[in-house]
Image (cartoon, rainbow over all chains, first blue to last red):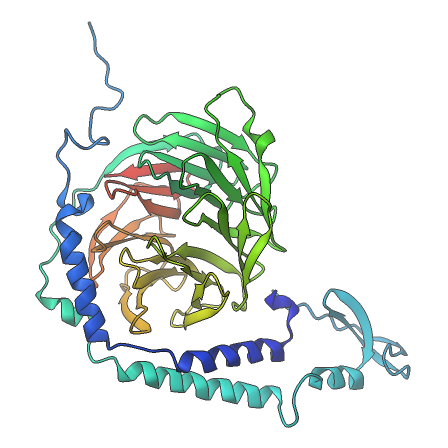
Length: 70
Length: 395
């Protein structure tokens, strides 16, 4: 699509987009970051890759392809 | 690469004004035309309003961009890693390769997990799409597509179908059947049609709609049953390399990243570009939404990964190191959003602490560049696909 457009058409498209974006509602970074941190802390204890999962519960840690010799 | 204007020296009557003069052979929308240089200038000025020139448009664009930066800067009172100083550091991770999936004959380009947390689908350069059971290493299904370089594949939410696409400019949906003797390729159905390669695809919340991104610079939403185009998204000025849907059940936005170094957030219903971020210095290879839906991360050829907050409308963290010089090709978050896994072209996976901005760990194992990385739906494992023809599951 973009390769079919001449330079001025591309610039016009970018200009229209920028005009819309200048007026987007924004909230301060500190507020958002604190929210992100609270979100992460809430889920952290349940994150299997961080806390680790005990061997008997983890389907990947078990003996794979082991042989039982009778 | 995209603009092809050939200048050749020929003499003859101009197509427009019929005067005999040196002609410029140019291609307009793929049609060759011969205009004299005067008519070419006239044509370039058409469509511009009085007083508008390329330079004036560029100037306006620059001033608006500056204004945007100012507006965003007003709300930057603090950095993410500063707010996160009091947070406990992540303990040493014990992530190792637990499974190596061998079976592809050539570079593995893409993979996706099934919602049942054990199956995954992968696609490769040799045209094969394989569905694996991650626990047992069984290959459950295999489809051979007529095209090579299957760059995108996705599992349907129901687990009953997979979508794949690539250099054939199409994205097809293949229903998976339990009958192993059935020829799956025969039931393949073309859903998406683009004018250039398909770089990414994803099902929306149901099996009925498919979102695709393409080298033609657009993203599109398709109805799987009828193959109809429901919505198209224009705004990128170069190839779109990646897309990701917002995680919430009611979410109807998605983010896309491309070779124009921009990451755009779109509204799926209206087709509008809601927000745009341009801080990378090279092609954006991958974008991924944060589990909360309020932020996203991007991986780029400029060897950095960046974290953008949607409510603050700006980049809030950059994950980079002087020793990392190869481009990052893929990113994904761990379940809690604390870790960011990024696959690089130097064959390694770096694990970053999202909040503090430092690298926690490096995962070695692959013998060629990582093409795609995905954390399983329940967060217990990470799967990486690589150009060394294998996939690895880390846990």
